[in-house]
Length: 441
Image 1 (cartoon, rainbow, N blue to C red):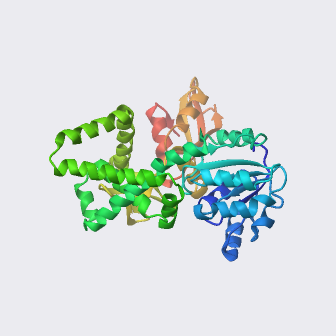
Image 2: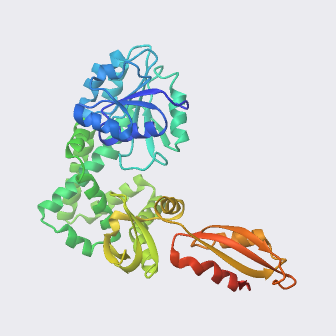
Image 3: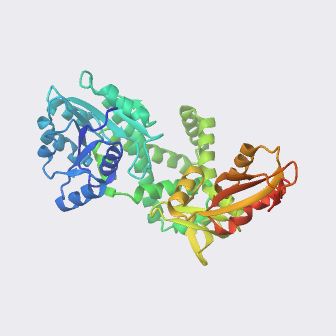
C-alpha cells in the first residue's frame, strides 16, 4: 500500500470506525468508495468526505483492489458471505472485526482462491486523531496473503502504528479478557452504582485520583453504543468463560470477607499480584495517568493573568483569553471582554507547532519596524536569531543597515521589521534591544 491511488471499497463506512478509515485513506490519496444501508445518509457522508457512493455492496466491489469490511459484528459473517465471492481477481479482503475465529473462517471460505485475505482488529475507536502509536492486531491466514502482506505492514509502519501478529484462536482468547471481561466488569460496576443510588457527582468530591480515573473509564464505556458492547459479549464465544470466572471469583472473595477468612483473602490477592508481575511498570503508568488529571489545573493556575489558548475536544473551537480563575474542574478566562467558564475535562491546552499552526490560520499579523543604534561590530545574524526567539515575535528580518553622517564612528543603525499576533506587543523588540545596550532611533 505504499503506492497511492488504489481503488478501495469500504463496506459500511457511513459512521463510526468505518467512516474514520475511509477519511484516513482519502487523506492518503486512495480512491475510496463507501456503502451504507441508508442511501440518503450514505450519499451525504460520501460528499462530505470526498468519497464515491454505491448502494449495492456487490456493485461497489466490482473495481476494488482492496475491500474493507466495516459492519457490525453480528452482520460481519453474512456480509462476507454475500460480498466476498464477487471480489475481483487479485483483490485483498480485509475485515476490522473484534472477533476473529468465525470471521477468518468466513473470509477463507468465501473469498475466491485468486484473492487474498488479511484480518485486522484496530484497538481504537473513531475519536483518535491519527494512527500514530495505536495498536493494530493482525491475524494472517497461511498462504492467503503473499502479495499484499508486506504492503499492508509497510503502510502501518509508515504511520508509526504498533503491530501485533496473532492467530485467530489466540486473538479471541486474549480479547475475551482485554475487551470482554474489562467491559463486563465496568458495566457491572456502573450498574451497581446505579442500584445503590450513589450520586456520582457527589462521590467525586470524596474521590482519590484512582477512583476518578476508574470512573472516567467506566463512564467512557457505558456512554457508548450499548448494542455494540452486547455484540462484543455475545460474538466472542470465549467471553462466556471469562464472565463466569469473574462471577465465581467475586463470590468467593465476598465469602472470604463475610466469613472473616482474612488468610484466604490475603493469599488470593497475593497470588494475583504475583501472576500480574508488573508492579513497577503498573505504578509508573498509573502515576502518569493520574498526573494528567491534575496537569491542566497546575499549569493554568501558574498562567493566571496570562493569555492561553484552549481547544474544545468536541467542537474543536479554540478559546483565546486571559486566565482569571482555576479550580479542580473549571477554568475561567476573559475572552473578548467576557468571562467564559470552561470544563477542564473538555478542553486541552494548545502548545508548540499546533498552536503556531492555529495562529497562522486564524490570527491577524501586525508588522512593525524599529531602528536601533548598536556597535558596528555586532553580529547581525545572531541578533536576528535572538529577536526571533522572543515568544511574542512571529518573524523578523533586517531591512536596512545605515552608516551616515548622523551616526557616530564605530556605530551602525540597524532597522528590523518584525511581526506579532498582538498589537500591544509593538514595543516588545524595542524593550529587548534597549536591554542589550541599543539606542532606539
